[in-house]
Length: 103
Image (cartoon, rainbow, N blue to C red; front, side, top):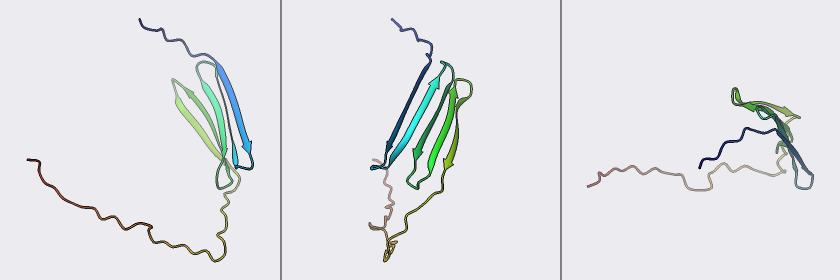
C-alpha cells in the first residue's frame, strides 16, 4: 500500500543564540506558505563580521540567497616576539609511481 503524499503545509520557526562567554552569536528565522520558503540566518564570524543570508526557495526558482556582511574584518595582532616558521610539520610527500599488470 502506497502512502499518499501530503501537500506542503505552512510553517514558521525562529531561534537565536547569544552567549558572550563562548563567542556564539547566531540565529535563524524561516516561514513557508506551503509553496515558497522565505528565511534569514546570521552568524558572527571569527573575524568579528556578521554574515547575514536572506533566502527564498520554491519549486520554480529553486534556492536563491542574498549574502551580506556587517562590520569590518578584524584580526588579532600576533604577540611580540612571535615568529612564523614556514616549514612543513611533516616530511614532504613523494609520490611513488609504479605499475604492474595483473596476471
